Image (cartoon, rainbow over all chains, first blue to last red):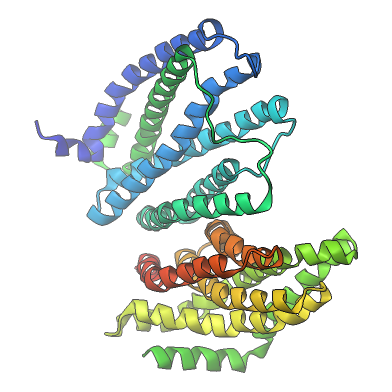
Length: 241
Length: 219
């Protein structure tokens, strides 16, 4: 089987159409299982009470926000280096979902922080770098939105995403050192409490659910982008009939 | 080639001194606004000074980034520079250095005066100047990437701040951190070394990335 066949937007469009229901169903099932485990099976934490249960969305969202940025930079880079249109479209499609998960991680973190630390926001290294990650996503999306020519938008976005990817570790460590200089640790986020196995399982199932959701949504968005960019081609004309 | 571009850009800047002075006065005004906003207690101001000066330097350097390529782009000079047999990265490096000489170096020179307004000690002032001297070239170099990417776009001025400011964060942290660390008796050497590392890394990589960005924007 020749996999490169699906590098063409016209054939990937149909492949994605077949894959979306699979990932959507997987997402729905794993969300249902994950939420059931999270709400009913996992025990109440003896320190944090019931409020800790937000971990089941907070941690998967934070993981995905970081992974999706790397995947976005990867596809953008591939699209720039090999001039494959689909890769660039993929990067464009990933950005909004990545930004959404970053926002979700920040938001759920704030909701979790208020009952635990008594503050919606602390200038902890992880929170700050997650916020900066959100800025990087927004920069990527607004740069692409400002450029009318899609090919230039793809390449400019790729360069920015790669520069950002190089900067992410630098930013993370600078923020970490900044943090240790400024404030004595009021709350230690770094030492993870020993976690009950059911909690960990619930979290892993929820991460799986978030992955499946992200893939389904990204495929839907990439289909829309393919249609928009290829609207002058014959095969799109065929579909429209 | 390097010298020629630097000389040319400096001469152009000298013919239009008001542009240079605008950036400088912007820096001075922003730094002077903070005491008016937060109150005149010297103890607090002394603590805030490095952060305020550094944030103002970031904003001032960013404001002048728009001019880095824009006028050359409009009159077609940039296109000719792309066509010359010389390396585009080298041209970009020269333009970034000229930008720093015009809009970064004046900030470094005036910073001690502004530091005095905040009652900083002589030692802290020295560290501030060294940190700015190491850090502001990084702002010009990294900013060149943003300037090249947003060349000729709608709302380029606002867009460039979205792109570039997150990338400036490490410089801000190490720069302001150096002054604070020396005030806290920890010694500024670690922060200044990191700032130097940022400078070397951006000297090596930023001109290359900005040249690639220029090629994307000009094709």
